[in-house]
Image 1 (cartoon, one colour):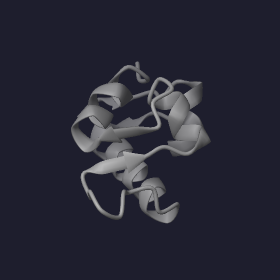
Image 2: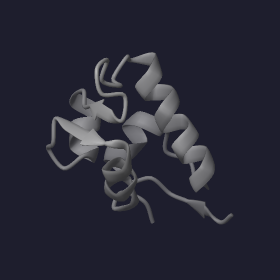
Image 3: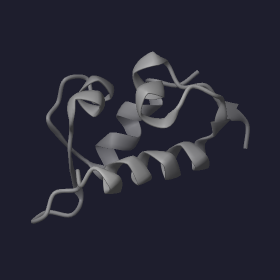
Image 4: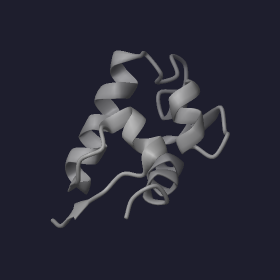
Length: 76
């Protein structure tokens, strides 16, 4: 898979160097789990902290599926 480059807001979460989408997703989930951002009751929802809120276009909570779409807008 061709590497993608995260923009500045996504780089704050996963790092700035280019990486394949699979690695980007893996790093994103590592960040979510490390910071306990997965909703305790509804496991398919992600609660955004300050860094992720920027990536999620200001939304405080998004579904896993919506997260993938929102993250795609932050890579080139």
